[in-house]
Length: 222
Image (tube, rainbow, N blue to C red; front, side, top):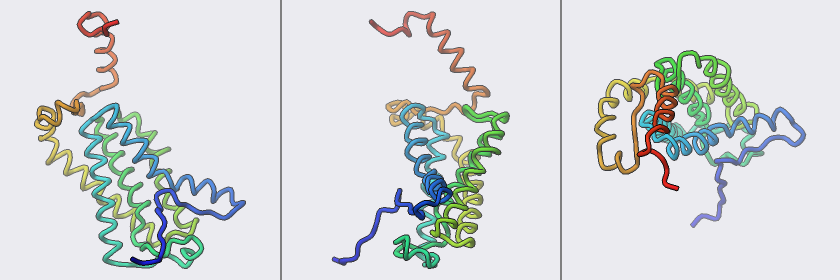
């Protein structure tokens, strides 16, 4: 067994003491963690939408591909990795950039296609929140010294490519299987569903919730 120690880098982000911008960007650098744990875990617990579940699956596959490439290429991080204690991992391509640009690409296409809760009017959210967060995350990895410019751009480019390809795969090849998954033992046991065929899901659920209030069979037993 080796005596060398390694850190779990999931939330291990360093910045220079007194650097307010660095402090802000360190938190920005954790956005992928917040999306994974706060966003997709909450989505599964409370929504259980197949579109969201395959979105999360795509991000997982993307990160696996990232690790395979890093292990194969083995390009070192910038020299600042010594201070950051991150030289024991490879830098090309940036996994944070790849994650965020995959997320932004898939989210944009999902919004444009008006699936689930998302509507084309919400493209403002995409333009002024999602993409700026992706760009800031990419910038944070360079500013904080974890990656070179080339490494973050490689991750961003790969993320856009994989996000677009996975969206096409899900919505052209796999979406036909959604009803089968819904009716399977797994789907019926966990209440997994697909609502991407409903044009305005928010209004649909609102109307049905109000209608159910008038039927005694839907009311809770006191």
